[in-house]
Image 1: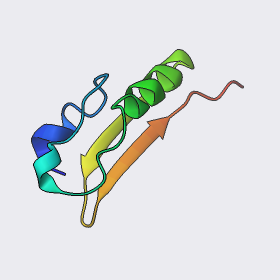
Image 2: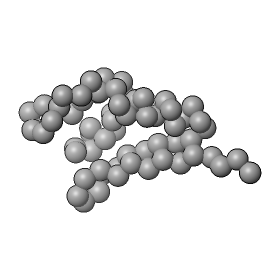
Image 3: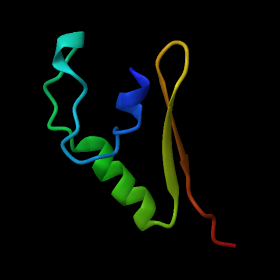
Length: 64
């Protein structure tokens, strides 16, 4: 995934350029919904390019 795409990954309705190939049948809402759910629980979510693929990191607070 291009770095500029990773920067927009959590935006509602964002989809990677369809000319790059692959399955682009989604609505572009999945990662925005994931971010809302994680942040709703007081956590954070981030994405970064790794070889091979994409790494998604989620941190959630733990109640003691």
